[in-house]
Length: 254
Image 1: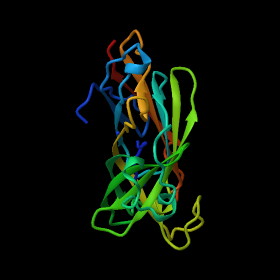
Image 2 (image 1 turned 60 degrees about the vertical axis):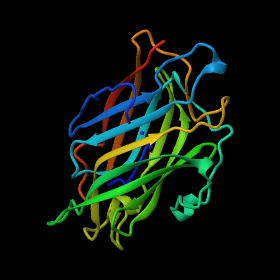
Image 3 (image 1 turned 90 degrees about the vertical axis):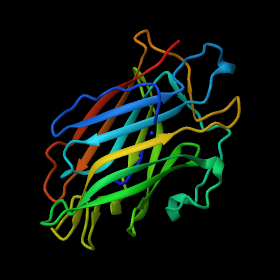
Image 4 (image 1 turned 180 degrees about the vertical axis):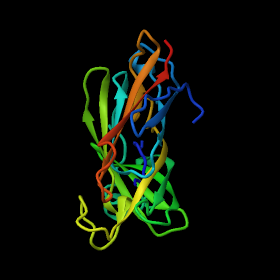
């Protein structure tokens, strides 16, 4: 499963516009919103941007082990001036993190026991924090349960129409439960989780000069491109597809 984020992916609410993703078997869709979505040519006048990402996995019987979130090259990401909370990586607790390191929040839904006879619903709260200058942490807390963990997203360079890749690794406890679990699992003693959806809103303003996200441009189409790739693991059988891709756009104005 994946409690995430993301979230984020973590990623990402009443914002500038929406793009529905393309689907592949077994399918996924994604919606992205940006606020504010107006591009300002003068660098000093560019405002902090908030990003909302909503991902729906079309087949929750699949166990996700990673998420790759590609951001439009016009959306600049910077951690300069932001506070960090490295301890959250080991404690999976954002409550003691400085407010300046908290980037946003969201929720995730999953199905537990997808390889069993009595699957049940799982719901999570997600809090995004800055772990260090290159990593975002999505702290996952189960609603009414004891699962508390963190999905780590590493900021990497992308190419083409995408400028940044947020590469998110889903922790083992969010994917499978059982003393004999391995990946790929050697036995059938694991209870596997399946991702249903993830929604996260992130963004942080430090001052007039620094912010987590800013718009540095707007394509002639006035649509910012985004892509989310969900990868899957055995649970215990091989997944129907190694990954699914959801492409989406968010409106921008000049």
